[in-house]
Image (cartoon, rainbow over all chains, first blue to last red; front, side, top):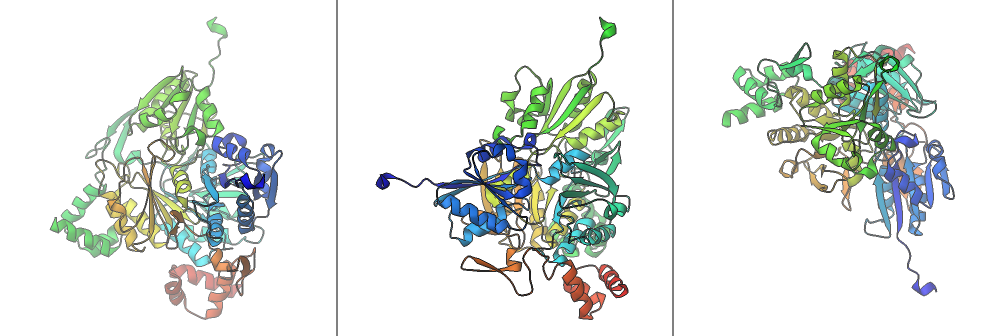
Length: 318
Length: 318
């Protein structure tokens, strides 16, 4: 009865399976794999979800074949199949979501067309590693991949320099491989231009997987540590500390409160639940009252002179 | 029989419940809540896990009472109870993990003592928002909180400036509240110093919750958009584009490959699966061969002169 057959709409799930243990996978990720006719992924990640694959077509690809994975997914989805493209961690963070949309767009795919796409988010390596070492991400952070397979080194170096200077907690993805061994040394050199040698560094390999390995070290010794393809490196900011084997970046309660015998009291000039006196409004009042020139304020606060000039001009208008 | 009683070891789970729908919570997060005698959290997050709370003590706190939540958790855990401190997203990313360790350390807690601590990672707001709008995080990104309740504005401003200059994708957490309305305007101003007015921006409110709202706009119009306490703002990098309503940051395949009728060919001088010719090793050869001074190279590559000088000195030693 060919005439009455209607081609089912195919679907591509971009699934972030989380760190790699089934316990840390979301229900939606598990369900997406259950619904899939075909599961496609890097061989190591396919192994992590092996118990969920019975009766499915499984396509294992090598690390550098992201675009081929996406092409195979689209082919099958256009036949009306449901395909799960799996990434470890989050599908969006250096995962399959990007390359897949690049392939789909090039093939003329449109969202309302014959293939639906759903992205299933997951905890990324940065979240998994942080959970295992303490609370390093309690303040602003950034993620930088040290892989130069698709990114020129000067771009990576500028980001390392900027992140170090602005005191971000830094997560290094793809820190090292068999061929790429000098990149972590260069990253260390750039970070050390702005951050103390004893800055805490955590290196987590295979988080929540059987071969999990956690090492706490310092920025100065980071390059000597065992780092590989499955490692993530977390570099603390200027306030990150290690205590009882835990790496913690303070949120900043000390800026606002004094702790005395368990009692918490707002510091002079500060109010609980309100912006700091050095917050935006307080700081604007302060720079206006200072009478200093934009150039002098720019040096004092390490901010661009034109930004300070614009602020002062506005304030005197207002 | 008091004499034979042994106090059970208490436990604090720091649980990241993910974006807020049960489908996107990990099995471990669900299990932690199931095991808990007491569940403590910000009132909005407690509501998100309401179906899991039957028969448990539930302590709802307001937004700014993070330290009090941790104090109450420790008190109960010291009585041998199991307590789940819940955070939306990831417990480590601006979540309860940091403040809890600060309180535990201040109270003399030690890891091998009477209270165990386990952090359960989850997909953070950045992952959830990215999954809903396309693939904005396919390249290096950073997270910056615009809240100045605990962080001085110049620190936040320096990070915005650095992230913009180094072309990170930027996620703004806590972008706006009833009292803090100017911060997002200042963030926009700093980002616009380095990034085009038409840079794609996504604003996602209450991702994966009933009141979910997604808006794609541009950096130029960002401050006019509806932004609140439950919004996350994602600002693209210089290459991020929007197509068919999806926001995508390319990984960089175009740096290495030419696509011709679906066939992929490495560009002249590039090799599939290897570092770019402008990767670390290739770039080092190039700057050495250029005969240019460190100062000239520093200007050309927007990198610090001392870094280039050190690299050139090493290369001529080697």
